[in-house]
Length: 148
Image (tube, rainbow, N blue to C red; front, side, top):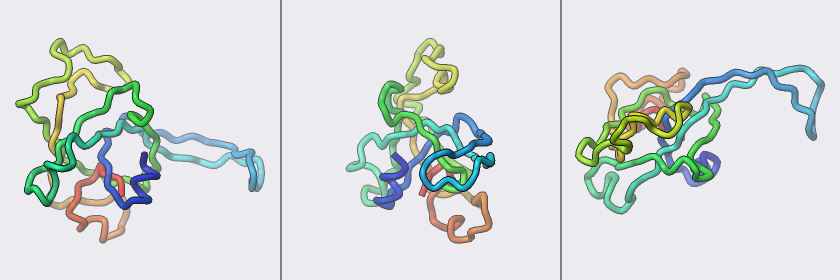
């Protein structure tokens, strides 16, 4: 999902479920040696836009997003931390209610017990800081948690 977004220049929002480091040994084409290399990655749960026609700058509304069903192929993914901005305002749409009335959820790993049916994406965070020193990322007008 992120690869398609990067090719199209679209931003995506996620909920970060975990931050991981692994020492890996690559044995495929183009390998240099059997030395272990440190690999850092984020395990994420993607949001999907509810209705792109009625949200966004052109309609003067906040983007409305929700979590796709967990059994969909692109519901979860892995992302390089370098592709992530760090701060995010995801605002629950309280009028739509919670996804699970009993608060039990389906998966502890997905942390879905407190999920709402829909969320809004805020558009501006004062003093938003990117993880790296790249100043242009801080002034995009988007929020972090959004992958560019």
